[in-house]
Image 1 (tube, one colour):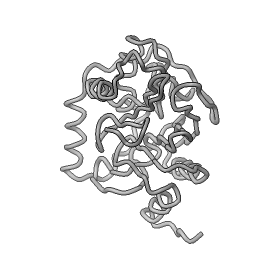
Image 2: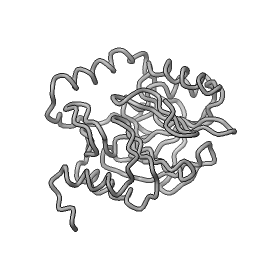
Image 3: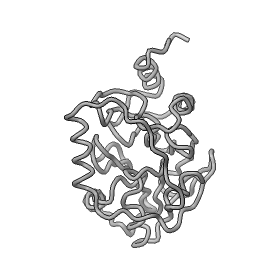
Length: 242
């Protein structure tokens, strides 16, 4: 799905990955689940590209529904996979993520999330080679993305900021559709390892001047960061006047 010139989504409001496209090639942000590779290929074909045009795969974090097809594409194309150091350990299979508490859920949206997993499962593989990035580092790949550390959902969660595209890719630093309750709107994402840390980290988005906020789960947000943060705080019951 085309979001804006040079900006595309693979998947849907349940699970999504994204593409940044320019004349030099394609950067993929997150890799959904392995079965979404079919949708990746369809989206690329629709813009006259193939997997051979992929220059980089950026991970916001290393949960299974964000690293899915990364190793398969890396092995096939030689694209570089980038992640933070803590999440690189998980992406390569050298470290396991701890279990988190299961939040409340509703049957229909939970089944929709489970069904997406079942129909796009495929064969997940640990990523053989991951290049680590630091907070504030800008990569010389399509979209010129800058890493923004937002620890909380995982210790090494990142947002990726593309000023040229007016976009920030937030992974699970927040969500605009809760995968277990179906609630739509900007809100804290479930399954965070450090919920207090995640709430603090999301405030780092306040300094960004971008139009599009692109989550791993939920609709694209295009109403600006101030309104996004106000909606998140209101949903928590925070005093948004401060």
